[in-house]
Image 1 (cartoon, rainbow, N blue to C red):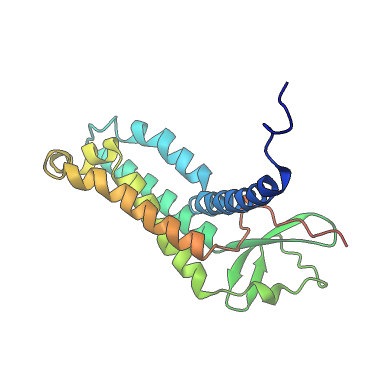
Image 2 (cartoon, one colour):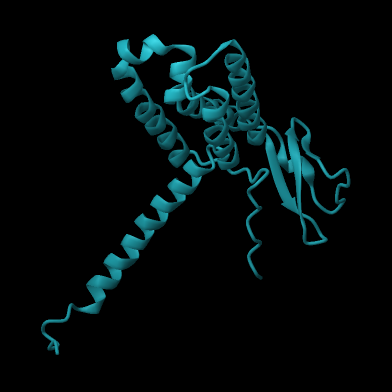
Length: 198
């Protein structure tokens, strides 16, 4: 059994623990913002379908067209999801919409008159988020072995350093930007934050 002299005093640990929790909370909040950077469903669909449409990197002309269609669809989805948001209606359900310069255009067609949808206006940060999302997806997608083998197979042997260095650099830049300037939208797939109980 440990004696009282072997146990650490509670006051310094409590301060350190609170400080650690604050740092830990900030780290997890930064990770949550990074996860919101790319729609996970889009990335899953791409990772699942790219080996099939590229014929595992051994593309024929038809495979190149199919791969181009897949890349276009996934890029469009990344961009579109950056311009969506949601709100909790008076009925208690989440309602999603597209962000416009005038406010949120509800996808459900029924707008709740008690909710001010004009507060969801399009902002400059939405374009920055969309650009960085597109950059991260482009790096992830265009530098996968199947896509490299399909579109630019000689690139893999001549530009190996670029293939290794570019993904972490783009990821670090995007992570830093979104840790400092988090994206506050709760678009399709991300529920709005729960209202604090009064």
